[in-house]
Length: 265
Image (cartoon, rainbow, N blue to C red; front, top):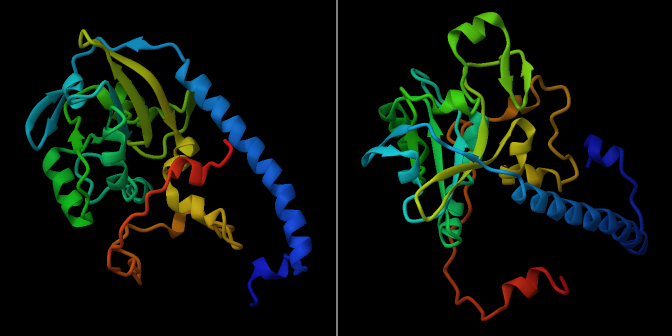
């Protein structure tokens, strides 16, 4: 191998590798504990009651924010960057969207509805969604203040002024649309509360592909790229596309998966 990753790495005995790996494992465990502590603090954040009457366009007609919950009490909205007239959605948001389909059912069985929302009209969303082969629910906030109130869209005046409020600070706009994720709770009386929102690099936790890249020797390999994600494409626009090979299904063994993945937790 002649990659820069190889040039910067020592080749050692299995024993030396194991010692280094165990040392790193201790740091990884600290990170896991810190991540759990932050998640607990996130859940303890105060809530804000949502009084605005937001209405969304969906394939099944108009829906209020409360109706987007369906039969569940918790709602996660991914703010997908796709504005009116855009020929396609943001490639970065599309990478996140590639991970959404597999999460919907798991979350639904934990009292969570997962949905994407964009300001593009529903017909434009549906056309792009069909092209990409996604099946998760995706609503349009076109004509609503929802995107503006949750700071993922900016007005023409804000663009002209060169200042927008995003990720909890004033900054220069890069686009009329920005990515984010917002969480809501609906109580037994049907009242809706905003509990959490995250933006910018905090969204990387939703990108499973980056998690894999952070494990491999070359990492994200984005040095010299401006922006770093310049390599990213919609999954049907890479020069070469690779898909998992089809395999015959096998019986699932009776395993306690929690103990399997988290022994002695």
